[in-house]
Length: 617
Image 1: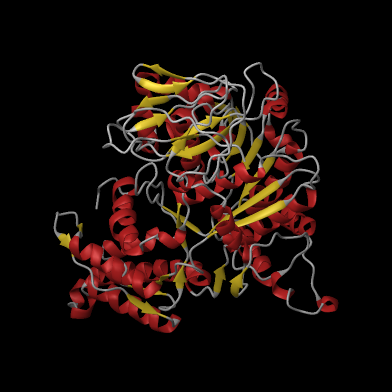
Image 2: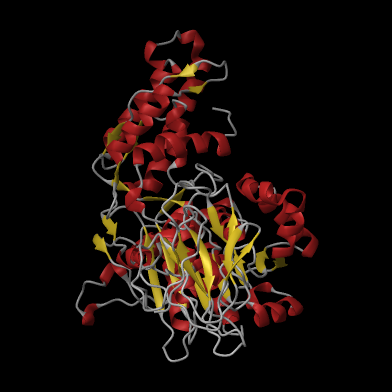
């Protein structure tokens, strides 16, 4: 391989130096000062001749930003031995000479080739993103915003990012973009970077288009559809209804039919390089043990997948959509009818081996994509429970109550002192920024279309249960320690001291605990005078509602708090191994490195209290 290296003298470090990216496709390497960054940096390398012939594509190489004395640049023959990976050496040619610009050594362009030895190039994530045009659905959602922020911060020269937004017109879409994306605290780093030019930069890169993936041609106007079909390189579908027990027709519309509609549009895109579906690791339903990263085929049925082929029951996705549509058309729109549609979804999901309507319809969405993709390359990202950011752009950012958060907050407020859960079970959690980093790495790896290879479907599970499990009884201890040292306050400003959460693996025991706890908190256990019957009845009613709400929450979560599957992430690990050391720093997603004590007590709960409760607890 060709390489470009620079040797530094042995004197003390004079300053941190950064290699600027020069986009002229010739062999330039310019060293510039950058006192703010003390980490490995990148240099663009091309093997082209000065006369423009035999130009090879630019590629990034990793070099140290802690170069020593900016003294004599050493010129070495290409056949010289490789030096240390943290050393930059400049290979010579007869036309190349060292010059000095603003006191910094550089090289004039030269016609000879250069080779990199001993330095891992990685996936070239930033390089890949530059100039690419994206279409993102679900763009005002939690995860999509973390992704948009990361792309704009790391690759400001990215092309247009079309955001499909459900709105009545263009003006309403722009307003949603400003209110729900541009004004979000998540974008503070970009806001500081661009200053007064922040809004113009964002509106130049982000293009809101009205549409809905539930509609044909994803609801795009003709002019927008034509523009996007001619321009877009990558489509990311992060639109979803994540309610566990949603109406069956509503969940099918967005989670199953939606991906099919989007794939139909994707096949019209002339320059499309990749279709990426954000799914969930729990599409694996009630599978047990180690669960591999395998795509779904149309008709797969978890309930009978271990049976012999002759007895296997096939899942008919079209029939499920027709069943839900017919049921909704026959009924009314009142609350009773809505509950019937919710019950129908749960019943159908469980009959085929999935725990709830959400994961069932998401699994069928994957089937729709795989069966209709044709020659479109596909990546499916399956994160487990996505929670607050671990590090990037800052620790603890989140939006809304995620899966485990209602329990965490109710416990901290003293409203829930126990829960229905397997104490030795595992809560599979992954921070949002790690999901985004893995997504961008997968895009860079699979977004380079190769004419001589058959388009693939690749699955990546971003999960912690198999390699860094967070055990429920350990989580209870972490929650207790946090609220013990930093308690919530009641309405009078008095600290709320909570006991260690009790974990129950029996529904009956949990119900008994809820009732006793509710009575103690209301004062019913102390008895009341019969003359206070109205107050007594009111307190009993409050206790009953409190118990019912807690039991309802536990019923919804039970398939997850007693989940027996562990998500394999071998594909994800191999993806990480393909990254350079620099990329692992900037785009890391090693869930095995997470310190749960630090993340839960110092990052996640403080993030919840700041960004969700807005400091009210």
